[in-house]
Image (cartoon, rainbow, N blue to C red):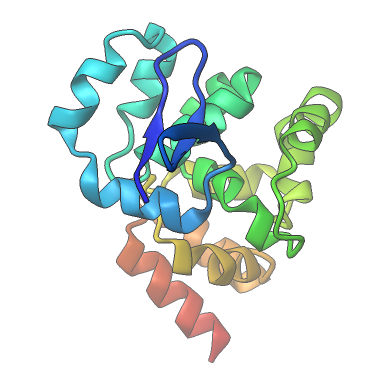
Length: 186
């Protein structure tokens, strides 16, 4: 089935049913598929109509650009915080599965952020709500974290050894994060 994203500012994620486009909440699989089919050339015309702040934020991502767009649309007040810690974006995009309820909770995310800020949001996602967690996530070289790395990383960040190990790494790659998760799980 074909999917599409409507232009800014009335962004909707839609799926074709028969001859009619119906708005929907995209699943992680749909977003992952979009990452495979939407390259820089396909994004360029779309981004021309996106505000500069959001365009710069989306430009931080390669494969995670569609999930980042979803988060930016559903949680526009978070864009500035996420631009400082872009690796947190994919945790938010995957929150329905990470929290175990299977449904998107965008209104709740916005409310938590409004009341408790970025640290409350970290806690809501099941991450330690600390400066060390933010520092580690800010040191991630490319914010396009693999979906399969999110849960192990979330668990690892609760280990004191992990905080020490990851805080002292100047740059964190998918490979170094995966190695740290596996080393501390053993």
